[in-house]
Image 1 (cartoon, rainbow, N blue to C red):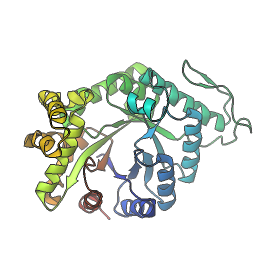
Image 2 (image 1 turned 180 degrees about the vertical axis):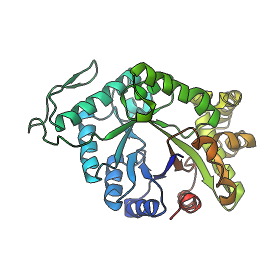
Image 3 (image 1 turned 60 degrees about the horizontal axis):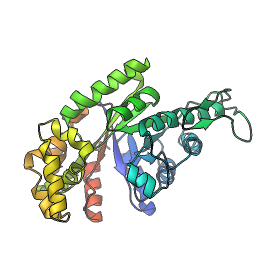
Image 4 (image 1 turned 135 degrees about the vertical axis):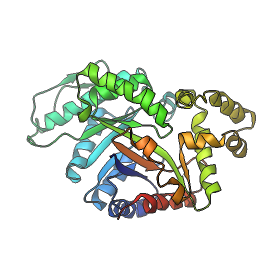
Length: 339
């Protein structure tokens, strides 16, 4: 059975306590994102607040950072957690990387593959290995000021890569320790598209599936008022569904026309939320999310979970009030926790 983690966020005053609750409830990991808050700082808070569970970033933006800097942060966090840290890298999209972070986005899959190899070179240098990496986009040709490290027995941190399309999936399977699947998905998309691509890329790279971790997010909305949960799931599906890159998810159930319909509503109504929700049919919620009362959702994760090694439970966030996001998080802990 897959292990389970919980996506966390929010004010730093509460983040450590949330991590303790995730651990106390018997989950296997806590994950933080990099949207309004920096991921490594969040991870360091959780690292010091927990003792058993993995702490991971889903995701840390790769391209705005030097791979050496990211590698140094991950190395330190892995020491701080006693080997419990997972650095999850993501590419984001071209417009955000270029217009917010003033960073390069060309050849994103190739760039990510080299980025991971550069990080691994830094870690091997810390273990005292006389290695370098000289790629087309990134280089690590010398160790730090203190020379090669002496941590000969230290395990390398785990690095996962967030991937949607085939090229980034191949980069993840070729060089990383695992893949982070986007929460907008379906059981059919995983079984028929994602996993065959992963298996093919691993085989081409000569790697064993047992040494690679498939992590998958899920849109999980829980409320005692079923209508509230369903609406929030529809809001999130509508938001993701306007992006053409995610059309293959809809296509897994023959709903590919929804992408065009949602984009039309988005433009025609000026992103009117009620109109977007109305454009998402009820059956789409069952196919691309898990939503309902605690009793309804308790046994609905299996369709996704059977295909993955680790499931990340997180709620909708698009146009969802902060208090409802907090309620949903607590419902996830109560509904699926064992402690």
